[in-house]
Each structure stands twice: as C-alpha cells, then as structure tokens.
Amino acid sequence: MVTFFFVVFILMLIIVVIDITEKMEKFVSNDLGFVEVFAYYMDYVPFIASMITPLTSFIATVYITARMAGHTEIVAMLSSGMSFKRMMLPYVLGAIVIGGLNFYLTGWIIPESNRDKLEFEIKYLEKPFVYSERDVHLQEASNIYLYLRGYNNNTNVGHQFTLERVNGTTLEEKFSARSIVWKEEEQKWTAKNWRHWTMEGEKEVVTTGQELDTVLAIHPKEFSSDYRQYDAMTLTQLDEYIEKLKERGAGNIAVYEVEKFVRFTSPFTVLILTLMGVIVASRKSRGGTGFRIALGFLLSFIFILCFILTKSIAEVGDLDPMLSVWIPNIIFGSVALFMYKNVPK
Image (cartoon, rainbow, N blue to C red; front, side, top):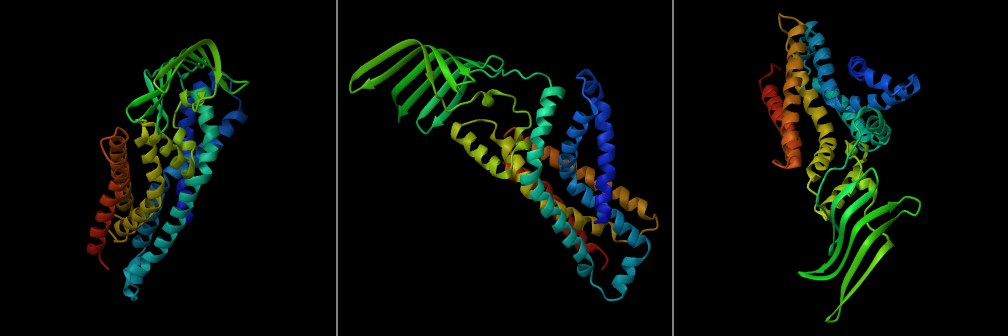
C-alpha cells in the first residue's frame, strides 16, 4: 500500500509538470494567477489519480514483488510450507481496499470537484463553443416531439421551432414559431411569429400571434458545450441522464454508457492487474528486478492500448458499451489465470 501511494505521488508529479508546461502559454495569455492555477490542479490531480489507479496498483505490485523475489523472500515463504494462494492474500485484500475506495471516489466524490475543473477548462483552455448542429429533433414526452432548424448558443435563440403532439400516427396539435428566445430573468421562452394548430372534433382551429411567452421542457444549457460533462456526473446522475437521452432518442448515448461501465469495472481491473503483477514478478530471475519491472510496464502499455481501442469503438456505436469495457478485463483475466497455472508454486 505504501508503494502504491508512492507510485501515485511520483506519477502525479510527472504528469502535473508536463501538463503545466503544455498549458503555461494559455495560463499567461488569460492572465491567471497562482491561486487560480493551484485551485485548478487541486481538482485535476484527484481526477487523473483515479484514472491511473489500476495501472499504479499493477506497477506497485510488480515493483514490490520483484524486490521480494530478488531477495529470495518468496522462495523462503514457499519452502516453509506457505501456499502461493496464501501468499497472494494480502495483495487481494489491498486490491479490494484500493478498488473499493476508487469506485466510491469516482462514483460520487470526484465528479463534484470535476465541475470546477471543467468550468475552468471551458473558460480558459478550450476554444469558444459554438453550437453547430442542424435539424435538432427531441422527444419531450412519449407523444410530444420538438424540432429546431438551428440554435445560436451565444444569443440563446432557436430558429424554425416546431412542437407536435401525436397520437399514434395522427397529428393532434402543432405549435410552430419562426424563432424562440430565452428570457433569463423569467426563465421562460418567448415564441415569435407563432402559429398554433389543433383539432376540435372535426374542425381545425388555427391561432397566430407575434409574441407568446411559454414554458418548454428544454433549457439553453442543453445547447451549451458538452465537453466531457460526464466527468462531472455522479453514477446516479449518469443513470438519470442516460435515461433522459434514451427517451429523447439521442444518438450520443454510448459515450455516457461507456463512462458508467468504466467506473463499475475499475475495481475488477485493479484486482486482476494486481494478481497479474504478483504472478509476473514472483519468479526470481538472473537479470534482477529490472526485467520484471520493464515487463510490468510493457503489460501496462498493452492494457492501455486495448482499453483505448475498445472504448473508441464503443463510443462510435460499433460495439456494445458494457462489452467494450469488459474486453480488456476478460483478456487480461484469462492471461492471469493461464500464468497462475504455470507459475512455480
């Protein structure tokens, strides 16, 4: 555990130094002081640390086990009658503690601090956001559909607005407007050059007007930047948002589902990689601990590559999100099981 936290500390120092170097020009151009930058990295460090927890636990396991093997401690334990399973027990307990803590932090604590981090990045580090999607279709309820030709997020004005109520395949009511404008003070929309059509029995009723204040089930924040907004959502909020996207028939659900399942699989990743680390580094070799540590880094790189590949495929909709985040665990879990059966005990 001490080695794990030491590895996290060292890696975070390296990552923060590199990140500051890359972003220094933007910090200076935005005239940011020490306090603002320090507050940003206080939110940035927990986020990155949680992301690399499975790999840092693996590296720490390889390092400490390789040193024990180099000093013939593992040979002595096995020779005294201790089973290999018993020797792995402290590693399992440590992985459970680390994985459980990381799951709790990434599920409910770190998303809270990520909100300030994302707000800082959008304001100072990212390019100004312009909503560019055209022909926006949303589903407000099971039988109510909303359409916008386009939306300007700088002026909070939507163009060519239509709201329809449909019963089966029959259009029962339709409200349209040339534009809708958001009124921040009143928290309402104003429809301009509007037209309302409905059926009363077999009679069509049409009313028109210049302006009409109305309440809609949409908000300007839905047209604001969605830059990594899933990082600022707790697991509960992610579930609610995914359900909301499904009701509206949105097409970017996979990104949020992948993020949700990654948080659930992270504790299992910690456990699998920790056990693999023990198996990789427990055999004493003539080359010393260096080779085992290098092998550990190589396996870490392969895991990252596999994870990024499957995650990217799932985010574009070509792979089931749950399956995508489990594939690296399945592969490395199988490799760990094979290695366990062949490791000298």
